[in-house]
Image (cartoon, rainbow, N blue to C red; front, side):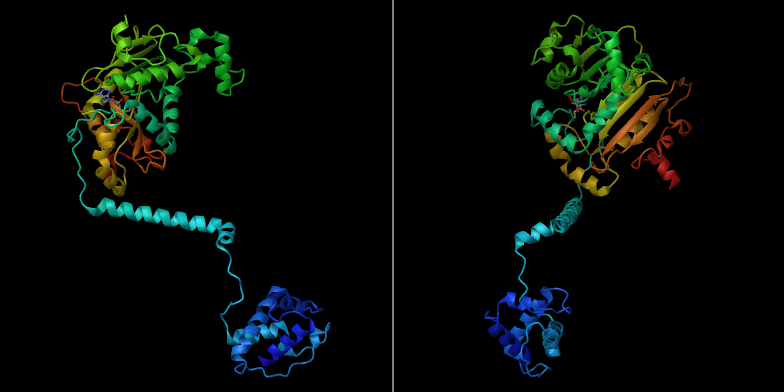
Length: 473
Ligand SMILES: C[S@@+](CC[C@H](N)C(=O)[O-])C[C@H]1O[C@@H](n2cnc3c(N)ncnc32)[C@H](O)[C@@H]1O
């Protein structure tokens, strides 16, 4: 070590630089040496050696005399004074002392390792959230009510916020959780004479295809062209091949929700078809009172109707004149919002065309993860107070009970779409088989007709009916 120190001091003198100058240390091996691969390596070793010499010069194993420095011939230096040898020597004494390595500033650290830091942060956040949720969900028993016997009657209408605030709130959250996408998909299925039950503020309206309903506002040729272009069919095909929405009827119990529903209708129906018929701030009750056509607001010569009514406790509005039953019945987030959801399914089954008609439901309720259900149960009362619906109902059970009561009711599809909603949202398609009631008590619950099995495999979140699952397990 002493030799190292002496050698370094000598060189510092001869080059008229301070001995501790890192530049000096770093430059040494450049003098023709081929042994040093990187200037950083000798710099660190030399510095370490230098700093260690003062305190442990006597301890080192190398006690060679320093050789005179000869510029340009570092190979002739004493073996122990070569950077590698020095590094080895110094590290054998102080193996883990990176004393001269300047620590990276925090800002630099963030710049160079942001991806790793971000990943670690996200992982910690997920783990924290999961642990906290698990703890909250299992702290104590959450209240769980029998469907329809909850402490307050669901209305589906916002209890704390106004319908306007409610609607605005949903704008953000629905997009985030993929509900908007599901609404679009659902509305694309609405063909023929369409009934929307518990339509609320009309959040599905912008996704319906209004072309046939507003056909009088455009020429047939123009409609054909735009429609075919929209479908990517070019000039081939004909709109006659397309199934379109021929009429729309919406029903809801709340006039305040329907006010917003009408406003939305005015905005989304194309060709300004609603602009003359509806004011900018429509009031459902006023307009319904002025209507000549009976209950509700009738527009476009009855092709569009908005009606107020209790969809669970009284029959649903009849289809437009000349039509026997509806082709499509749509219902989104209503089973959570009525006192008797099974009754609502009874009414929908009675309103849809047997065999060919479709009932499509988009709902939220219990997940298949008990952890999530614990959270739903715990927050159900707060959610009810804010939004007027019980979001911890078991939709699967409700559908199953309805299926057991309604002759010919078949579950065509039952999916839990998307992962962002943690299995709480369900997409259900039902149809009614044209079964003639027999003399006895036909529950309509015939497994050979059940559509549950048919739905298996249609989605990674598709589930089978509870009774099928039990039998299989
Ligand atoms: C959560 S909102 C859903 C509204 C709309 N379907 C949607 O997807 O945004 C529930 C709706 O059900 C309506 N509702 C509650 N009970 C009803 C009943 N018995 N008959 C008809 N509508 C009802 C409420 O007024 C409310 O507009």
